Length: 218
Image (cartoon, rainbow, N blue to C red):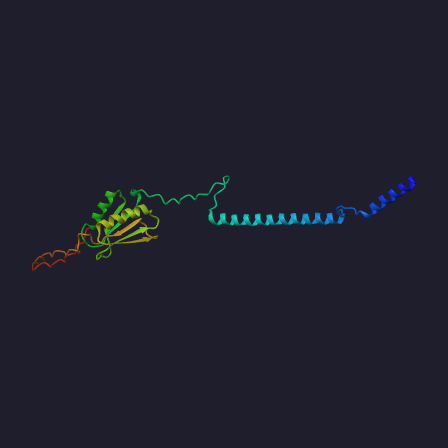
């Protein structure tokens, strides 16, 4: 009897075990894990590529703005080149400037008067003579192209202070540094006419000698 009861109990346990379903979560397969890992890698790579592209675009944009808005500064190792100013020709000493004055008005002492004015300024190498024409109203001054600008300005200013009109020109062929043909001064209107001289009465026995025209003093 006892054996039969035990057999029935054992059969009941087996039946109970067969009837009760097992509850649990399905185990993930290996293929599913690999797929998830590969997807994660691709996502990380995509994020890295996007971040790199953003950094590259920002860098290029900032660099172009700096180039457009800022002037380049010389590097500390290479000093900036500063061109030296072109030195003008050193002035020739006034006593070495050769000046030729020609009386162009026929007024006696016109060239000598200007010679005195220029000597007051320090010029000493001066010659005076008469011009071929004696009808100049404007003063003509011709400077040699080799003469420095300082002496040119000094002489020009003096002539403009004395004479009514001054015409300035340059020449590369003249021997003197400065050639001046005098014109009318500011206080002169025209060349004064020569006073007539009385003609001496010739005696019957002597012929009258011709009267020579006076030459104006330079």
